[in-house]
Length: 114
Length: 113
Figure 1 (cartoon, each protein chain N blue to C red):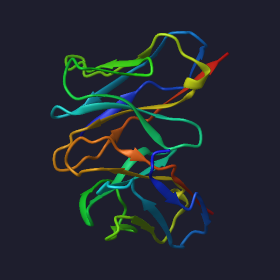
Figure 2 (figure 1 turned 90 degrees about the horizontal axis):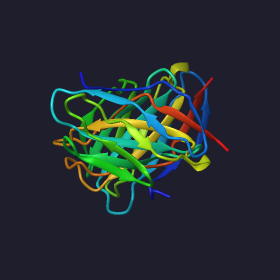
Figure 3 (figure 1 turned 180 degrees about the vertical axis):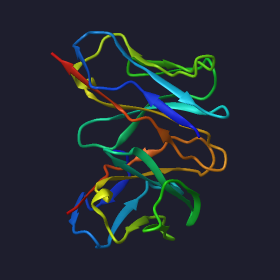
Figure 4 (figure 1 turned 120 degrees about the vertical axis):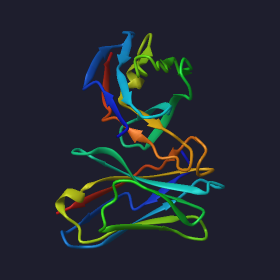
């Protein structure tokens, strides 16, 4: 158990809908990262937050957004969903932002868009 | 841009066989290199890492050496077990202002008794 929790575990929704994925980092970790794992694209970095502020952006679509709240949990919002958004979404956390810390991964949320 | 290339899987081995999973990288600077493992139904776990050239990372019998001259970070284990069956990801990270990981495509290892 990494200490990172993600909810829900599974999500099935229809095209055009909007969903919110939630992540609680390990106690004491200030950085949260979101990754998408799909058969087409592999495992890709989406976005990083550090202590409530956006720190880095990767291959995140404009239809996707994220935020980190004062209690350090993070949410990833996916809107106008398409079939191609079906993937496993991982959250990871680390103590700091810039240092090369180990990232601790949650179990993931499997999103299926039908 | 920066990238990581891994050998295609699946790799199927018998228990106690020698394992090599190849990983090469393309980078403009001097990244740190990692191997992560993903067991079925779980998130990724850090297996080992190396932060500079010629460093050797090791953990649980797995080893990988950071070779700058060949831009490689091949994963090896002398004697695999059934419990090693998982997907293995090679990754690089520059740290600095961010800590984002760039992953390879992953290699599925299946160890048969």
